[in-house]
Image (tube, rainbow, N blue to C red; front, side):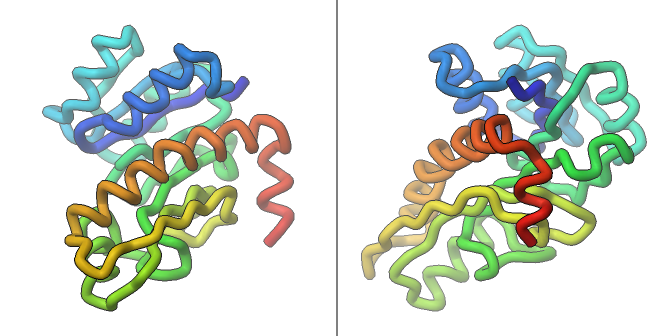
Length: 191
């Protein structure tokens, strides 16, 4: 079982997904702590309602100080909008989900609606999401899972976002379960 620190910046929809799947016994993980860089993030309120320790922390040093108080296997970025630098003992233990099929529409500045608007502007007929290990460069770490979604010609960026988020709800738990089964080194050694 993977013991997770979940980092959020917003609504906590991904945290909701994790919580539901843990409760159903289909995500082989536990949420040990939730940390947000935004003091008013709805995700913090949800974490408290679920009974998870929840903290506001700005910057890597403050975040890592909190994480050090918990027994953590994975740091899971769940809509966390900052480049996160983990402590040395967790360098190869940070997961992120990106709302495109990396290497398309990724890197610094590519997140959320910016991605979906670019996908629409380019006329893509598919999009999707990528769960990957995170390192010191945005969206560069080893890929664990990718899910593709078909797009209709008349899909708006909001329609694309909804389809991709549905795929994310499947992909992120699947990736965590795969890391639990295969281990982190399997993915880092692949690339």
